[in-house]
Image 1 (cartoon, rainbow over the protein chains, first blue to last red):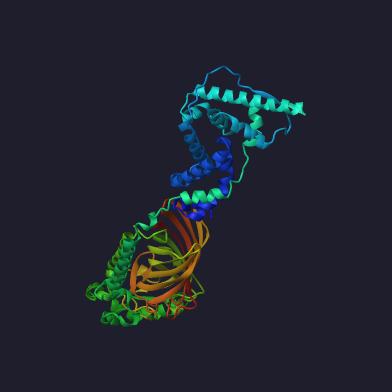
Image 2: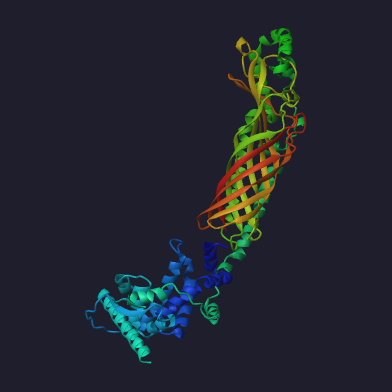
Length: 178
Length: 395
């Protein structure tokens, strides 16, 4: 069955088609949840909520542009709405340089380690870092998605980078002292 | 190996395109939270009744058209060629206006006949024309002028049917039924040689006339792969036998397959019309009822299907014309066309999704007719190629 047909079947609430879509895109979408969420447990919750939203809104997909892109946007939005609700984080806009550079060895860090660093970031920093660095949204788009000022988005990103750099360097020092 | 790395790139490399399969339990969580949407069940009960009622109406109206004898359409449809000998016989005794024979025999016959009968005919031709016309008008069956009438009847038939089917559009769960309008240019030719007009034209070059077909189609999807379809089409076909010698105003051999009801429509005094070469056009029309099975090869925006089946063809038009560069003259109906015959159909069917339930449909079909002629036609086996196009509505 072609993807378009599958999507149409999903819109008719066909359970088999829904499962097929889930199996096709579950991996990619779950990884998004892992990155945007605070921990694995929350990631699973968000993933489940996101997929329910997807199937409830799949009839709104207009068959223009990539279906995968649409899925990602719905999933990210679901997560953002959730965190947008609870978090109020006031930030001080220090001027921090755009380029943050760390001294690393090839393949020094595992995927899990990096993911963990992201999880440890404060909520807003994590979201902005993900949106900007991993999913390529502009500060303008982020400001709209998170209902924050563009400047806030920029400073959030800089703070996130600074924290990550600090954590990486701490880790490296820890390794050396062993 | 130590390297200074932009912190963004460090994360991008590892995390941008990675995939993790979600835990299995999540799916059941999603499944439980998906609402059972009973949307499709909302319409069916009344819709099914409505469609059944519409179908019954359809059959009744079709039946009425076929069975009511007062209708021109039915009169012509069930006309058995041998029984409708025209009542204008009396005039044909004194006058057989055309002699039509093949080239080979032309010279011999024309010369002898001309001398004998020219005198009879040259006299009061105009009077005879009038008598002829009157008698044929009085007799509805042989009146060629009634042709347009029953053609319009059959047009109504097609549209009536369409209108009725449309009333059923609203319901029936899932996209099982399809209604479609059809129009097709038809290119006709034949296997074997011979002429539908008379055995003596066996060696004359003949050709099929291009024409058209139109109608409606109803399809029902049996399962994912197979669809069964039927419908009603009107189709006009024509055969032309070329290089025929025409000698106006001479009584001679009758043509074996034509009922002798020729109407004289030309002043035969002008000598230039003697021995004109012309062609004989045999025009026949059918009401076609196809029964076909469609096998789905691919679907998506473009759906490709293979189609095979057969059609029942009911004769509803039958006329022979003689045609030269100067004039056209009706010679009556052919006697050898069967009122019911069949065709084997094979072809391809391509759907293109335009909008939601609307499809554009193009279907090149090849149809070979069996037992078209009852006798005297050589080994003629007509076939035709039609590109059936139309709009499909799935409901």
